[in-house]
Image (cartoon, rainbow, N blue to C red):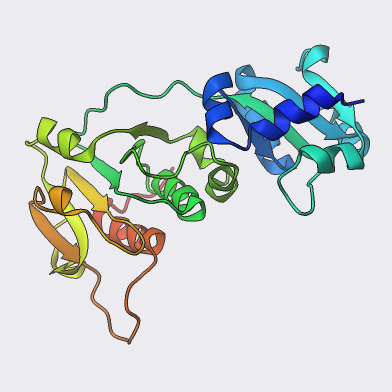
Length: 253
C-alpha cells in the first residue's frame, strides 16, 4: 500500500524543480518500462505496477531487487499517474548523466532553439534517434527532456539520444569549423543542397523561429519549398524532412 509521503513524492516529480532536486523522473506505460528494464535496469529507482501486469511479466521483473518493486492497486496508480487513463505501470528512474561536451566534427548535429512544446521536443528526440543523431544540443529555454510529455512523445528515444543544454551562440562560436545551416522560410531549397559531411542544423521555436543572434551565425539558410497555402511547418516535421535529405541513405544490416 502506498503511503501519503510516497504519493506526495511521486506527484512532486511532475515538476522540474523536484526532478532536478532528486535527480529522477517519471516513466509511464508498459512499453517504456519494458525498454528501461531490458536496456537500462541500473537507472531504475522504483517500479509501481498493477497485479495483473506483474503476473504477466514475472521474468522481466525477476532481475529487480524486491525493494525496487511495488505492486499497487488501480486507485493507487491513478493517484501517482499524470495520464487521464493510467497504463498499468509507472517507474521512478534516475536521470542519465548529461554530456558536458560534444564534438560535432564529422557529424550531423541537431541544435534546437527555443523548442518549448514538450510534444515537439519529444518528437525531435525520436526523429534524431531514427536518423542516428547521437546528441541534440538545446538552448536553455527548450522544454525539459525529463518532462513527462517529452518522455512519452520520444517513445524511448530519450534513452538513446544524449541531450545537452547550452548557450547556442557560444556553442556555435566554439565550433566555427563546422558549417551552420538554419531552417528558415526564406532559405535555399533543401532539394538543391549537397549532402553535408558535417553540419550544425538549427531548428527554431515553433512560432518565433530562430533567434537573431543565432541566425546571424548561420553559414546558410535552408528551407523546405512550399507548394500549398500553409503558413509554416511544425518544427518536428520540418526537422524530419530536412534530416531525411541530409543523412546518408544507408540501410541497416
